[in-house]
Length: 225
Image 1 (cartoon, rainbow, N blue to C red):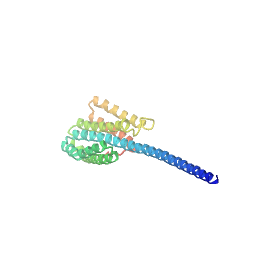
Image 2: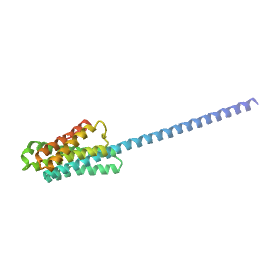
Image 3: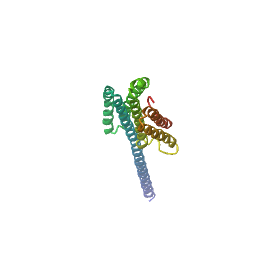
Image 4: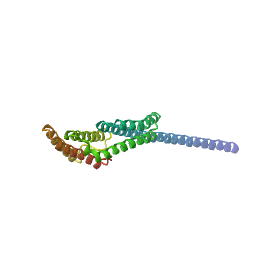
């Protein structure tokens, strides 16, 4: 009877050990499932952030390319426009291909190169214009139209930064810049109606400066301004 009791005890203990082992394996499996789920969630968040960064950079590149085209149109410098297109299109196409593969981080790097190339081209044109613009205009009206074009470029960049990139808002901090810009712009329009293009050009240039100061105050680099 003692042997039977001992055998029964051994079987009982063995059963407990098996049960404990099964519970341990089950807990380990559950922990592994939780860890995998968390890792998947983190991976999704990282990809979402990389995608958002890529999309923001794409909008920035598109905005700068649009600004570049307007500048070259004003200067009738179509060669400059074609050169930039030739330089940036491969980077943009590569970025689009990488984005389709969900390689958003790598896609953004390719867009960064297009962005820098565009900034450099805009800066080179602005620098040249600053040096020679006083000799370029045959009439005061031409000078005004040039300054108006610059103003519209900055206005476009400001709107892009607010509406697309959400870099800053129209609030109490930015209101003084907008008030100043609107005041100069209104004064310039009044002078244009009187045919006083020379004075209007000076005022619209001040309106542009207000927008440049707004962008710089918001931490945004403006090439050649």
